[in-house]
Image (cartoon, rainbow, N blue to C red; front, side, top):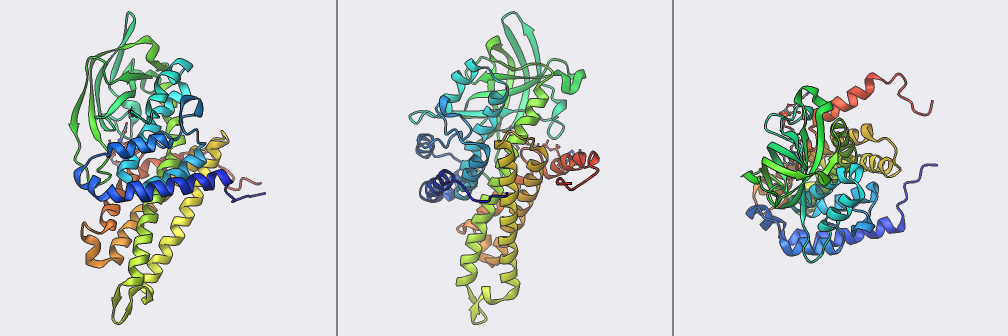
Length: 389
Ligand SMILES: Cc1cc2nc3c(=O)[nH]c(=O)nc-3n(C[C@H](O)[C@H](O)[C@H](O)COP(=O)(O)OP(=O)(O)OC[C@H]3O[C@@H](n4cnc5c(N)ncnc54)[C@H](O)[C@@H]3O)c2cc1C
């Protein structure tokens, strides 16, 4: 039996998160975008509601949501403001390797830090480097073992929460010639000597989120912070992204939905040639396409999230969802600006921000091309496309 009914708990969570997005995020979204800042009070309120790191289990003070529910909550948060929500989402990305591969002491020590309503901390996921983006296995940050420590040297770039994180999950290589096989993962505290913040990026969109370089200069990491052993680092990164890409897909649908709602409202109100522009088929069909694609995208991310929640393999479904939903997000937001005509190009209209925010969905956590590589790679081994046969 296929059941599309949400549980009462899921409905309640979506409603609560939507109200938070509407009442707390939307009123500050344009200002935070303009100033490129994250509102501290709002983050505290989010922490009190378990929204600063949706995947942190309840025993470590988190919201304890499964991946499907967390993806649906993510849709709501990104509907509110993609910049603020990206910072919260990056917490989830950063702690997922700890959830997958960390030991009990590491979980107890670091996970609750993100959920403290009085003083919620941020975390960041440090994989990308200037010379290693899509080709993540080619990272150059080195690690050597020296007495009681592992010593890290290298430079990470484009790190969300880089400048505000309390700790980082950093991937480094013991031996670059081993490629995938040399990579390991570490929990690195911001306070460790040798950790510094480089360039802060001035971005097109998601401007409320903080994106920086993170420089590691002879950083001595205590052995208890060895998170993923050599040889497994790359696979934990891939497992992490399998789990979090449904979230980026959901984020894309949140932004697309916000743009669609604005466009629909505007199309019904704006009168040209003596009638609302919605009465023009060219406009109403554009809105029909938006509604249809948003609905299709939502089903794709929910299916990926459902599989992840059940502990089933979800790499392919996450890539379907991320590639499709991010394309939908870009298309819908561009068309929402089109529906607004010249007004959509102006900063006082929300759709202007949404169109800028949308583009990142096709880039971070694996570009659209990389998602298609994953999908095509799966197809190589497929001889029968009908799973029920
Ligand atoms: C705002 C922002 C936030 C980010 N946050 C984080 C973060 O928190 N942590 C982190 O580790 N990283 C983060 N990233 C990095 C992000 O994941 C990378 O930018 C992304 O994976 C692409 O890498 P790249 O920018 O080096 O592009 P490249 O890998 O150089 O790609 C350039 C182009 O070539 C294409 N391409 C590359 N290889 C192939 C191929 N084999 N086949 C077809 N096309 C290909 C790509 O799709 C892209 O279009 C962030 C990036 C941005 C912009």
